[in-house]
Amino acid sequence: MRKINRLSGVSYSIWDSLTDRGAERRVTIRNNHGKNLVGILHNSASVWLVIVCHGFQSSKERIPMVNLAAALEKDGISAFRFDFAGNGESEGSFQYGNYYREVEDLRAVVQHFREQKYVITAIVGHSKGGNVVLFYASKYKDIHVVVNISGRFNLVRGMEGRLGKRFMQKIKQDGYIDVKNKRGEIIYRVTEESLMDRLSTITHLDCLLIPQDCRVLTIHGSMDETVPAEDALEFDKFISNHELCIIEGADHEYSSHQDKLSSIVLEFIKTHADKYKDTSKQAKIHSRF
Image 1 (tube, helix red, strand yellow):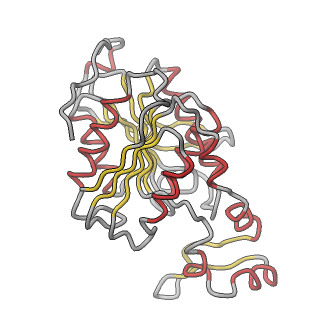
Image 2 (image 1 turned 180 degrees about the vertical axis):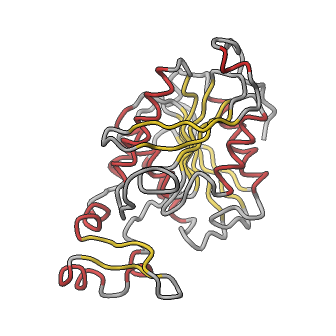
């Protein structure tokens, strides 16, 4: 990958809190349902800010989110990783599906930091969080750099493995399905409403609505057993201003490829973050590592 320069042209001392470089600060933000979202701000003394979103039944403390935020901070870009409502430390109850409500959680975070005079440089999401950042870009069209890491294009696939072969019949009969771990403990409940919310989420329609001046990167591991790498190819068909990167040998969590993942995300953000020009004429880029 080509060498690129750091983001420049931004004052690094707009307010006092920015002068404490390297500090991690707990931040609480209220969403539009009155629930407190809890996150960690990695303060690099820069007004450039990247928001990092976690995946399904996950949290801001999972390794990809922590490492990405730390890498951004080290490179001079502030980062914020947070828990969606019902996950991690944030208030609310966990819900299956729930994509568009998480989009609104992200919106609350974006608005909070804009009020604090940060420049939202990019939004980055892992797994389900990848879908959330794409759906955000589709709806609000106000962030020009989006990174989708291992998002799921086909939302129906994988449901049978989690919910059982006769999940539609069971949920129609009982109104809910309790998902249990290997010890037989209930880890979450899927209601008919939340199941239908997921089934009615049509990924390709949202992708088609992402504006052409929004540059999107999809990263996927070739050995991902949670979300097949072929889903990444589907995103590439429907997002107009799109770059696709497959990391050979990487699994869903990038367990042995954290440094590679961080370097690719950083390069993409620094290349495109300060270029708010129409890039629709650029050819799509596919790469493998």
